[in-house]
Image (cartoon, rainbow, N blue to C red; front, top):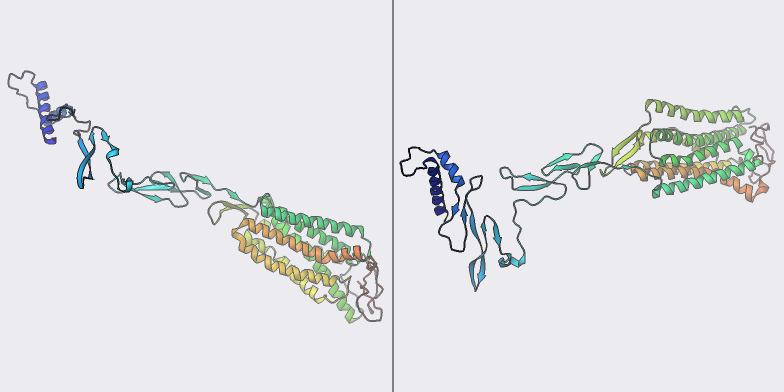
Length: 475
């Protein structure tokens, strides 16, 4: 059929061409047409195909690309009456005619036949060379976005592919917020500590002139309470969103708060040690144990910390940095100083703690100020344990900023609670439950002249066993 149609097409093209070139067909045509002219008329040829059944209409013609007519019968091989036979299920003649009810599929499952499957989300087409209709789907990299069906592009730093994978969006900022569970827990602990500190300060002020408050050094008690209160306040500074001001306050606040507490404790324990060591050697006129001297020493220790922090802030100003988290799903907002530098800022405080612990151990058996030496010792031993546990935890949790901040806040509050409980709870216990002990003792150390100072008279709890001779301590 295709050969017959081709011959007829050439015949119709020649007929049409000579009808135009030689309209008078009765005479000889002297014009010789070329192949281009023939091809032009061949493309325009249109006729009804011969030798077709009466009920079939089939027009032969060519499209604009010169493609000839196509007519096909579509068959399947089916088992009929025990034999496999061809069964016509449709045809093609400029359009598809298909009777799907005559199609039988194995297990009634329609097979899938395509050169390339549609690519899924965040997948690009890798087209086979020389065959644009066939492709393989390749998934884009996690940090790449699909900009068109065949191209993936890496997102800029700080950006990540969106949910559809067809574009980049800025990563959300991640930092501990006031409504987080860890933040709420840390704030509750801090608020409890602030209320406790205010209560202790109020009780001491109410009993400001009683022996137990005067003997332990009223001024140092209030300095300690200020330092403890600042430690509790640091929780709010660490939970606040990082900024240049907040990062600067973190540097100054944490190290300075600890310096205030441990400078006061170091001054007290050093004073106790020197007084009792001089008592063992006989009458010795001690220097730098007056209130003014002691406060000057304490302030000098605190000033050293402040100067170091100030120099650090000038050399390395506080900045905020945004870094991609390990899981690549958000941006972590942190102070640029980093965890290691924050720990280095506490080196001076570690030195103060070690010296306090050393002097507290030396004075653990001294019967001074209602067993205050033993209370200081207990406080410092517990503080060392907390620091030894907290510093490694803070460094290990660096990949989890929220957990790290909450851990640091709770650790700071624990240190404050240890100071508050170890040094002030025994005093409150005597004030509230044993007021009869809140009186001056009349047992004195021999060999040292007795004087009075703003601390009050130095005396010993009468429960201590001392020699029968009355002795005095100059302080």
